[in-house]
Image 1: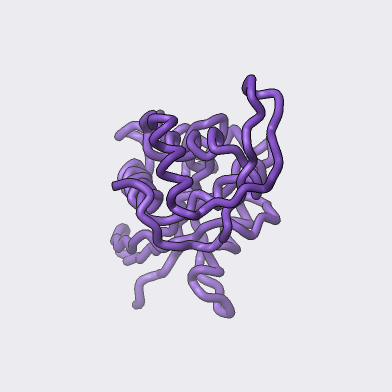
Image 2: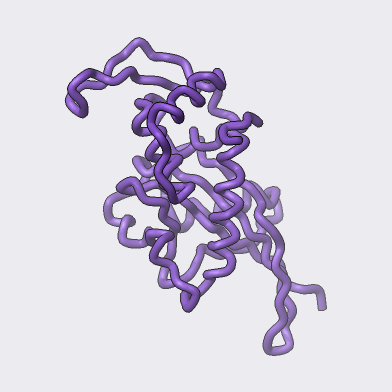
Length: 202
């Protein structure tokens, strides 16, 4: 008998300046491939089943494949990680989002989530995929907070801004954001909201 193929999702978002992962009933979202869809599109369909959203900027990447056998049944799970913007998440669903810092080794799926976090950290160091976690328009402070939440460390403000602006990823919208700082902050957007390779951190 052929092993049963399933799809497992590690869905990340930034909520309250924290990197969080989606759990439903103490488990990661799981589903099965659909005959008329690719694995990537099947993963997005499973996402819609668990988290209803109309956002189309979600970043999706296949993480790895797990094989297992138990009770005489063999199984293969294709694991994806997905990035969702926090503003697209309904308030009633926020209780399902767990702070990644609070996921201990005794929790279900610890190894899967830990590896996904590490892959995400590597990814933001050499690509622009953080666009999928932000509004279309944002300040440099908001962008920095997203990087800090993912990397799990504080970044020097001056060095971060100098580096980000030198990469040519952003464009000024000509707008100013008022009310957060003494001097209104410039509002930026990404020139492209598609994955691109770029060396963000050395």
